[in-house]
Length: 360
Image 1 (cartoon, helix red, strand yellow):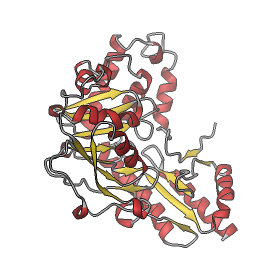
Image 2 (image 1 turned 135 degrees about the vertical axis):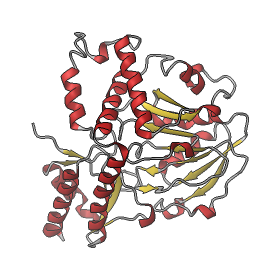
Image 3 (image 1 turned 90 degrees about the horizontal axis):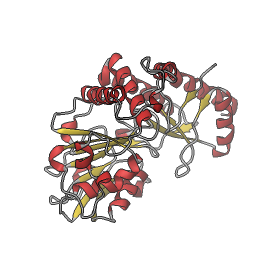
């Protein structure tokens, strides 16, 4: 079997060694005569898998002891509502910095629970940049300030953590988590859907400072309460066991290959190759401000949009999948998450150059 290079924005490509290890254990995990998907989440073997996954994630991200790590369901989109329900703590408003569609959706969801202060937005530039920090209109009495460190659709990324003073900073890290080191202590809460750099869809990681949880909106069901989930080790109900197990495999793979510092070097090199080529000719264009270009999601357009269908057809024939841009922006998008090997980026560049020769 020949595997393709999958540039999909998510669910995304997974590390081949992880897939091979999981395949070997599908019918028989640890000599127990059954697979992990068939096992109770209360059985000791799965409890060990869960504990190791949390310990490995803490080691990878250097998560301080005063932060809870939750393994939840519902996707990152569910957290758009769970965050205000858990973090408002009696306050009336929250700040949102909107740099793309996902930040915009998060702010919209929060309006059902509080007053949303749009501290800054780059919508006027079609989300091709990040507003200068000096221009943000933050509320010092906000319950929290929400950002989306990497916008998957538009390919815009915060390359540094913004200073928002004493207000807890909340970050939707769905498309950038584990791609490089991050100082968790600068955030009150970090959350991420799993289907890009962590594992299969169905799992959401929430890393939250413990002093921020426990005071929730009236009537909040326990299943949505971070404090209740933490007290029950993310097992208030049956968790997404298979996704949790696979995430643990990914964490071990990253640790074995040098951790997030090593991953950052590879990811920066992959992105630099693509951007260098995009900037060096005029057949393809990347619209994003160079000061905030994403390492993970690289959109580009062809000079002649009538060639888009031919480009995608040829790419698929060459074993390059998932390159069609999001319907909101069109064009192309190459998502080069952790599991995308450098050879995949090289193959994409070779194809792009050949396409120019044929159609330029």
